[in-house]
Length: 512
Image 1 (cartoon, one colour):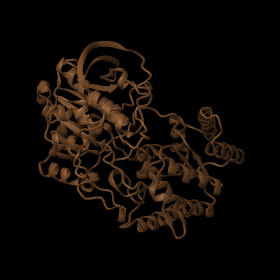
Image 2 (cartoon, rainbow, N blue to C red):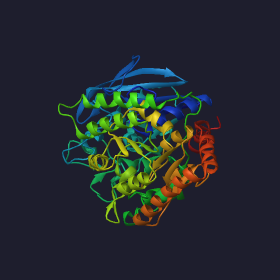
Image 3 (cartoon, rainbow, N blue to C red):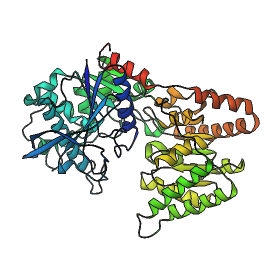
Image 4 (tube, rainbow, N blue to C red):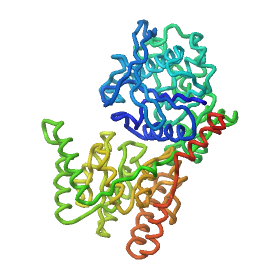
């Protein structure tokens, strides 16, 4: 039986092991692959935030990292759905959260060192046959890319060369770039014993820096991006002046991979088999109250965002108001920059809320991330009584919002695949999306949702506002057409079984 090892920073199969969409992919596609007869292993660092149900010691070994010999432990922590999960344990990996927010002017420094040690530990574990027989090494995002460097250049890890190595790009915007040398968080500090070809793994913009993302693209047998449309986009140069986000400086490497037949686009999937709980408005308000109180308890002084949201939620609950337009996700430049632009004298978020108010409709947003955009939404909530911004992460509350809104909103500047639109459609909630990446591949205008595009930022804003107006008009004046869109959204299927079949044939070159 063929076997694959997923190397990732996240997995939704481990409690506390999820931050973003990469966790859903690793957690779900690994199960789908196991269902199709593959032996699947997944390995993560052992973070403090993981809530592990079991912890079976597999082995202890030593690695030479940062000029020190470190004792590493490998534990088997979960075996379910045909997938075995492991964690690599060492105090330097045992961070409080999965990702660190570097505030010292050294972007990625803490995480880059952590994941460089993680990659080295996985290479050593493979050398010790810790995972048994393997055929495929599947690396996810920049966090695992240093394994491709070790495979290519470290003679003591020759065993890695026998494994077909696949590199999945989940977020091309985050590349993990660090100096080659001269810093405690640098390639030569981590692996002082390693010789390498700097021209193949350097950052194209900062030649003195190591770019893990580029290393993964250059040194893997196959490069996988998570939707067919995204393949076309990443081979073009980004042009922020017209609102186009493409290859993020790596378009030449992606063009090369495409020419060599190494670049594959396979759409992510969604779980349709697990029965989803049905939420009522009362459930949503109870979940929001619990979330707000939990977030408030972490502060000595009550933040205005939580206070306004709490008061507003009580008002809406009392008046029987439910959300019409909804959004759940990370509050980042990728996801919401369009809403923070100035258009015709005011912020786009204000235009959106004014259009909704004209129709007597409301908006509910759940998410956290970039402090600037959080401030934009918080201040908008102060100006508009038809907005609630829940500034945090709450999984069950998000599930309730997916179900209880009438229209789900994803104005992303770029979206490699997207999972939120699939989750909303699974609940029968159509989506209003920017026609980029996986959003273009999953949402079809006036069929299962609403799509806007534009050749410039201003053009995208105008199209987005016009499409919002069109969706409101359909909702109010064309109930049969609206019902068709909702029914089509709920019937849309993007399965992990289909994705897994494509993995086997196109990425792993396996028949079964």
